[in-house]
Each structure stands twice: as C-alpha cells, then as structure tokens.
Length: 480
View 1 (cartoon, rainbow, N blue to C red):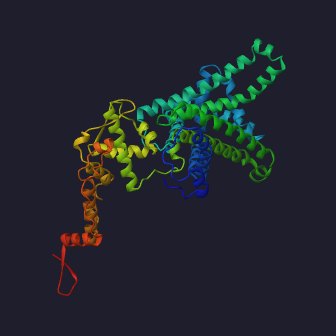
View 2 (cartoon, rainbow, N blue to C red; view 1 turned 45 degrees about the vertical axis):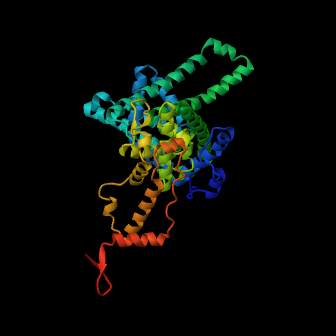
View 3 (cartoon, helix red, strand yellow; view 1 turned 90 degrees about the horizontal axis):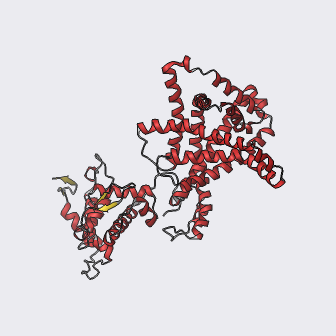
C-alpha cells in the first residue's frame, strides 16, 4: 500500500510503517487506529471534500429551510406537541447569541404564513419536493464519503425520505416530551432534594440536547447512507459528532460574543451572515462524524483518501489470485463461500477494490454469486481443470472498454514484439499450473527450467517474425 503523498507524508509513514499488509484486531492496532482516524479526517478536511459538501448543503438548506421547518411543525402539530418546537429551535440557534432570537422569530413567522389551503396541489408538491431534495443532497454527501456509487431506487427514495422527514421530528420531540414529563414528576422533584441527585439531574439536563443531537446523527448515518452501516460504527460517529457539536457551539458563541465586527460591517445582514456560518459549522460536524463512522467500519481506507482506490497491475493480479485461493479453500474445506466482507477482512484490501476484481472474474465466467444477503462468491469452473492462465488473462483484460481495445492502440513493430515476448514468458511461467495449485501449494517446481537466453535475442526474433513492413532500396520502411 503506497503512502499518500498529498497530506503530511512523514506523519503517514509513522502511522503506517512499511511491511504490515493486513490489519489485525489486537489491542495495538485498535489503539493506533485512533491517531490514524484523526489523520484521515484531517486530510479529508484539508483536501476540501468535506468542506465542499458542507458548503453545498448550506446552499440547499437556504432553499429548503422554510419547507423543512413547516413540514416538521405540521407533523408535530398533528401530535399536539408543536408548542415545544420554538424552544427547541431557539436552543439549536443559541450559539448565534443575541441574533438567535431574531433568526428564530423570522423562521417561525415564515412558517406561520405557510397555508396549505392556499398553496394548492402544485404548491404542496413543490413544498414536498424541496424538502425531499434536501434529504437527497445529504444522502449524496454520505454516499460519497462511503464510496457508494449505487443509487437508491426511485420508489425507495420517496418512502425513505418521507420517513426521515416525518418520523425524525416525532422521535426527537417525543424524547423531549418524555424528558420534560419526567422532570416535572413528583418523584424526580423529591429525589432532586438530595444534593448528589440534584447535581446529576442538572448535568443531565445540560447534556440532553447533545444526546438528542448525537442520536439524530446516529439515525442519519445508519438510515440515510445507501449501504450497510454497522450500528457500532454509526454510534461512534454520532457520539464524536455530538461532542464536536457541543464544542463548536461553545466556540461559536464565544466568537460571536467577543466581536462586534460583523454587526458594524454587515448591519442588518449580520444575523444572516452568522446564521450561514453556523449552518456551515453544523454540516461540517455532521459530515466529520459520518467520516469517523466510515473509517471505523473500513479502516483500510484511512491511508487511501477519498478518491477511488486504484491498484497497479501487479496488485490487481495478486488480489485476484488471493481471492480465488480463498474461495477455493472454502470450497475444498466444505465451509460457506466467502462474502465481499469476508474477503476484505482476510486480504486487507478496500471493499470497492475487492468488488471490482470479483466483478471482473464473474464477467470472465470464473465466479458466480449466491442468492444470499449479502451474496456469497463461489467458483463456476472446477479448480483442477481450469488453467491458471485463464485467471491471469481475465484480470489483465478487465477494464477494457469498447472503442479502446488493445488492437485499436497504434504501436510500432518493436512494441508489438515486446508484448509478444511478455505474453510468451507468461505462458511459459503458467504452463502446467491449475487453480487447484493455489489451494494445494504445489507449484510444479520440478518442471524443466525455461530457456535463459538474452532478452535482446528473444525480442529480435519476435521482431523478425512480426515484421509487417519491409525496407526499400533506400533503407526506409515501406508498407507491404
């Protein structure tokens, strides 16, 4: 695995010493993964991926904020708890300082003017579309962080996004209502008379908003990302994001309270400017937490960065051989065929890279998937009757697209001859080897040693055999 040269390479070499290919689960690796994760998150922020998504979400929030707030307010009004909406909104905007009340009052004024009866069918559809587009934008950012290229089906988008918009506010405000009911009960008030319990209740009341925000983050990480997110990874990301949100709120409130520059420069627009900055901070915290959840579940990506995990030709060949060997071992042992997750853990390679090689082998007719969820990978051809060259050729030819095949690339005779020499050397090296040899370990070491003639002699002979042109009397090359 190559060291990422784009961000603090010296630090990367210390965190990922050379020679350790597959991560283990011992205490040392678990401990070293903490600074590795911090390195990966700092690199993603420095490279601008997270900040770019955060800025995009701020813009989308401005367009869909009023429909989102109106939709949440309507849902809560149906449950009779809408009176708690404005205090919660004020608490979320508290880091804006004196400007929080102005922004909160403006939003509630906009929401109170939204009349569904006046909007009509078209206006109501636009209202829902604007709110749904916001959720779709968040999912796109999450999927990019998780290296997910597949899209949620259209029917799933409608139902899942509406679930987030309708169920999310109900769950959050139900938790607030339950907490308020418990706090006003006679039993809790009686227990609050004791100093230790009173202190505990006071701290719990201050931490409640953070816990609710962390719970909302976990829900979004788990539900909105279009891939299987483990609950532990989502919980760790949500917990870290909740703590970051608390720290960011304190820092932002200190910043707003300690400067009057924005008010002096922007005058009436100061509240809007601060609101935009606070939105950006919130989205950044949300995406950082999602990145932490991703790196916890896929630690092999910590060094690779946010781009696609590209492999060299020899790494791709080794990965194909290792995949086929793992599948063959399971088949010969009579155990369950491995999933992509099993192969990723065993080989220490990124999941999308393993999936890419598996797809190439399936297209070559070497592998097939079961109907399980997740699918398991198994061999199609018998290992003792399939030559090793078939596997190597499948990997070497994978990725060739129509219109850019090997034959369409212009090459001089010497280039074609060199390719022929390489192909001949590969054929001789794999002659007599079958896929079964990957499992048994028998590599036919007693085969006769191939000829060790000089490379120049072999290429010269190949040039003479593949020469498509002849020389004229003047010594220049002429076509036949």
